[in-house]
Length: 257
Image 1: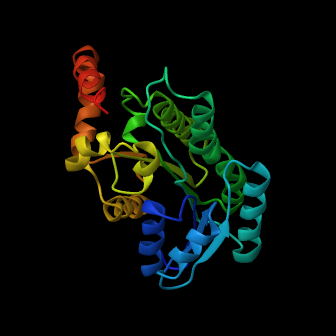
Image 2: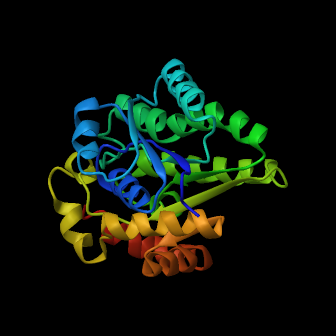
């Protein structure tokens, strides 16, 4: 399944992006790691077994995205899978949040995914096969206090993915969305420097290894969407069934961030 597959991963310099690359390399795929920090990519590269490659890439630059994706295709002749993983969050009350931070989250989390997909999709359509996996978030299914800007960017990822999936029906190109809950990664160094939120959700946190395994499983079964962990998935479903009740409870809990 994975042997010699060319898998482009954004945001691969740490966290789940780096772990996905590790697991893919172990299974014989050829992960192409991209991120803004070349130094961090090089450190991840030294820990990988098997064939792989790194490219410095800022997903907020349309020109750079198209240039790098074209370089990959010129070298390998194809792109089998694109994993849009680049993203970050800042947790703050909207009244205190800066417009610049909100714009940056939308530019990286949503528009970064749009740029990479726009660059890769024509290649996959020409191949008549391919798989685009977008790493969204539980926050894209269930918005909470102090995460309005971040949630909005992830809601956009899910909405885009659903619409594109319908457009690509019958083309051989698949679109999947993984919505993980909180993950034990450097994400929270910027999202929650106070550590208050992490203390509340530590018991629910996923390991990067667990999330990466779910991504690899998604490559095999091509499931449209999955929310993890199962407890978060149940919570999302209950919220949509009983929004008024859950709004009161969630507001009380999440305002403690």
